[in-house]
Length: 154
Image (tube, rainbow, N blue to C red; front, side, top):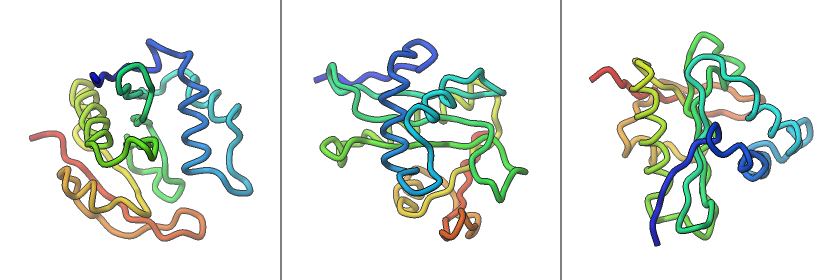
């Protein structure tokens, strides 16, 4: 089967699927977002370099990642961010996350972004293998998370 990536700006009909994945993966807790709220956020007008990508494996959407102007409340000084990297569990281990991250990086480079930021509680090894650098530890609510940076100027 072939893999291909589409943007949500080209396929806004995919926004509810991406929203559901993000809510279930990252915000499924008290005070988190509903799928409807996340869909509205995803479809809101862009502020700076902002886009969401959906990876298809054949005809099936299987993963997503995006670039956003903000992500971590404790670090409003940093921008933009790699956000919402998610691959459906049945499709993990096939390089899909790396493909999505590389697509976001390419989009950022085309927009003349010198560096991207991310935070993770579980995937530091994945991002390290892709060239992201450990910056330090931060707090996301009550959770300790790893802050990472990817220099895109080289």
